[in-house]
Length: 228
Image (cartoon, rainbow, N blue to C red; front, side, top):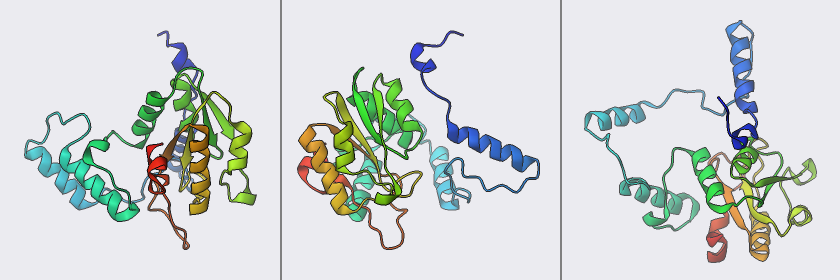
């Protein structure tokens, strides 16, 4: 099969490679701590299984609205308001097949070939590949332990160009676990507004915050930041 140049330009997932190797060693009886894929160490809770089974038996197996059912979108709005002080309407919510699906949709919707996307390192390995699939160019912005592996506005200013289309921010971060302080999020929001670029805020780990840290969503800072 002759694959497209687009597909041939992306790399296999290192995460899945590490996971496969760890499972191979475990099958050989080797005591391995698997830091490959990020999944819970417990099975799906019983009440979730029961609800899924009840939905199937109740005939809830048809096509849903493209953005997701209204009840689910209303529940998401309620959760965002309750836990993150974010106010959204159901018509502003789109339900996808997961975080990776949402991120890819966002990159495809925002990027044209030749655009650049700022990605602070260390980063989730899928970000650059999604950007490349969209025909854009990932621009890696290095961080270090001095700043807790959190990117600074100064570092971004050194890598931004007229072709920069968006910034991908992940807080709490994978793989570093870094949580951006409110004032740091404010500085990054000011940066994207001043440069007229978009911000993809990956907050999938917003509940995994410890040791007195507090997660701040850029969307809660101001109407202007929310619109970015």
